[in-house]
Image (cartoon, rainbow, N blue to C red):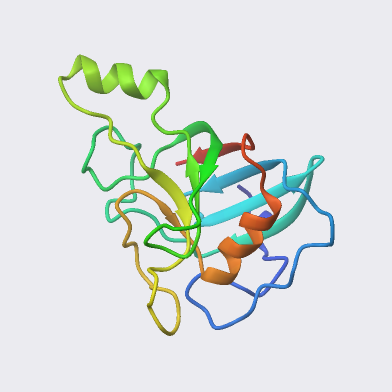
Length: 165
């Protein structure tokens, strides 16, 4: 991405104390883009950027595509939001459809499990204060609680998500 495209539309970021302004009433996010190297998650509606979260957090091993269960990596590629869990150990969570057929085939050919249970989620339940300011998940994408609440309310199941290296 060009540097000019990284200027945040809103001051909020995972790891900061700023509150994220709400998306316009009735806005439905119909596509998500995550750029791991730029640490940004962008939501689009009808081809127009409507929300941007910066300084997002990943698995403990953020570089590279998730290949196997327990590798602490965040997947890369094209997936969908395939469900939601309001009762997770984290503040809300949107399931990412990892592993896809290619992910399963790669792991199977090597006699391993690709893993699963990859989500976009908030902070651990009961954790007070600011969001965790380092990569800390087991391969998920972590936002602040306010940010995941916005996505939870505006991203329907089935929404495509692209995760770039």
